[in-house]
Length: 324
Image 1 (cartoon, one colour):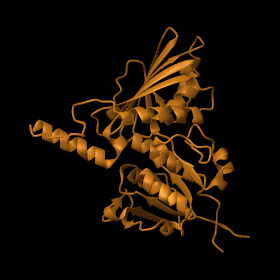
Image 2 (cartoon, one colour; image 1 turned 135 degrees about the horizontal axis):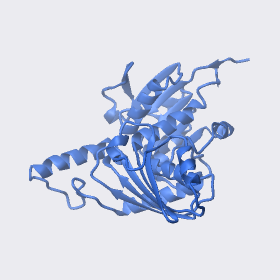
Image 3 (cartoon, helix red, strand yellow; image 1 turned 30 degrees about the vertical axis):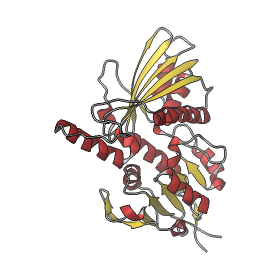
Image 4 (cartoon, rainbow, N blue to C red; image 1 turned 90 degrees about the vertical axis):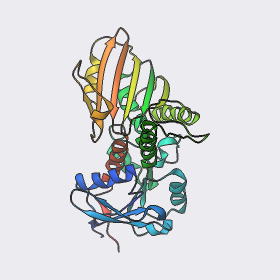
């Protein structure tokens, strides 16, 4: 009978914002592994990724078959690149983070901590492929499962980190140019610095977030309207929720307080997006007026996405069969 061994783990996209967070969390949470290899696209392969304990070289992933010798692989890369790997079926369990902006699929389980049980992930382990929801969909699902409202509206205030390191760099460059009175935008380029905007892409993502909430929710899904506004913040996300409650009393507040991953703030305590950067908790202030509960949620979107992926992988960390 084969004995269990620690899995061989790959992180594809390790030089990106979410990939870097995955590497840090694997180290910080003591994720067991017999081997950890970091990959990037060929253009981003040069360099290293550092954690508090180690420094890792980043290799170029030239072909999906490079992953064949691993037991578990995180795909923290754009959708096209992730799809190429998924279609190749290289062998390891794949945890795909590119599904954050896609509609959910019955063929690919979408999972998140506090929403999906570890037992359920174990039941689905034969699929060999999991996807992680949009961080805003994750937070919305947790809140709506706790509140059980009749209807809800939500506005996602999305910082540059939602678009990865490239978007962060563009915001920094635009801000520098604008303050130097030399900002010169291309015809199809949107000013990110000192601006807030909604584009067609934000509208499409908002619809997909609502669809992901409907797929993830364990309670009855209320009528839900979601809007995304891009704001000139480097890191982190803000989320406002207005929910029409069907019951009196403070049960909704106690349910929210007991929700895994949620840190409910004291009434009147100031709470900003900056407060959440680098934190794993979803920080929430809440109040009620009549039938309506209003929530202000702040969270580190890259950290939350990475945490959901690592939490999912922890289900497979024990009991990986040893090679013959």
